[in-house]
Image (cartoon, rainbow, N blue to C red; front, side, top):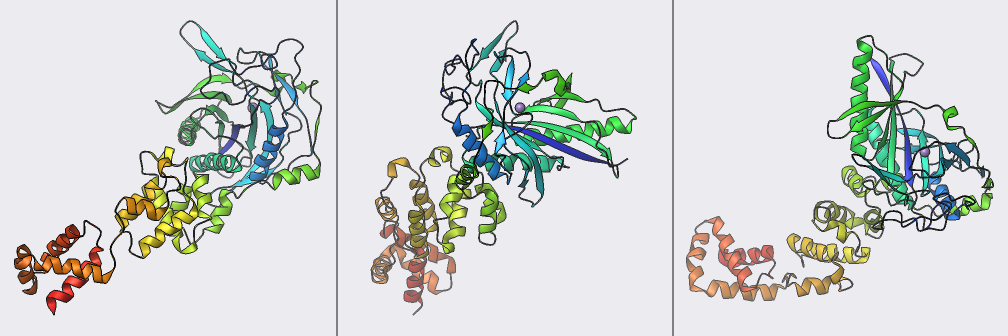
Length: 471
Ligand code: MN
């Protein structure tokens, strides 16, 4: 039997607001002690009341627009009850009935469109770390603003699941609403997979794998579930609706618990927060702040930058934005220097923090096309431009300081060649060349390069040598 897989993805994105969703505590706990970024509102002392963070609303609008979504002028919060030590309140404040972000779509690099059902705002839970006989709780993450993005069942392969998650990540970092630090859980994916016999109009029973935090693990978990469910169905078995855990080391999913239903959460309207009412003007003024998105760059650079190269660059908003200042004729060269020189560099992460201007990069390519810089020298100067200590030194000055500017002045080069030809130790090579031994020209060019302390343009030197020896 042939089955069609259908994959739905819920993605939680941590918003990079200054303060938390319902309190005025620092929302950036990176590098801070556990439980040091927590207010009485977050750990739910009796009588504490939440106050909604306006910046989170602005970020949600931008995130929604990045996914071509309708922004709902009216939305509100609900309580989702569950009892677990990562949430001192005993409930999560979320938007179950009327979310702020409505329907939209995300276009994958392949052109496939994945519809978004909705996305809602909610507070994150704390973090538990389990040991043999005890667990520790860190509440720094409690009520960090999240948007949870829910896809329509439009994904039908592990590859598209991977591409969808990666595109969501890019949209969020281009929109500037999240740090997008996957390693630290800034984006987490819950992936449900079901199989239906080809031609069937109904979806099969689905399983859900929660809290995946890399595109690769999303892809592998879906591949595994498709294979596992196919085998189960082929042997006459039934897929059980359940939550399964992913083990990255074994590459397998294992049963965890059967799925809760909405009624288990006893949803109720959040009584401590008024509904959100947004004016059209406010929605529009926030929407206008959305910069160019990856799909805009794909259209913009179609035909001028190779697709593969651009897809690599689209992981780095700063680099793609720098391309906007690059002259059309230099685009390919700069895009290639970014991918094959800069990103290959060990210090690339550090270098990405201090980008040269488009004007400097244009000047560099000009110097290369005028043969003032060899291609090796161009790469060397290129990397120096990213060195924070070389900031604002100027392209030409850096090239000069490194002694990399090539001598192209013909009169000067001729003088150098004459000195070389006058040397007794080059006499034999000169005779050999005249007798047709082509390869000794390399030795003579080498002597001229040495004489010029590496500054002569080697192809110009070779031309002069040929002229002088063969006439
Ligand atoms: Mn959620």
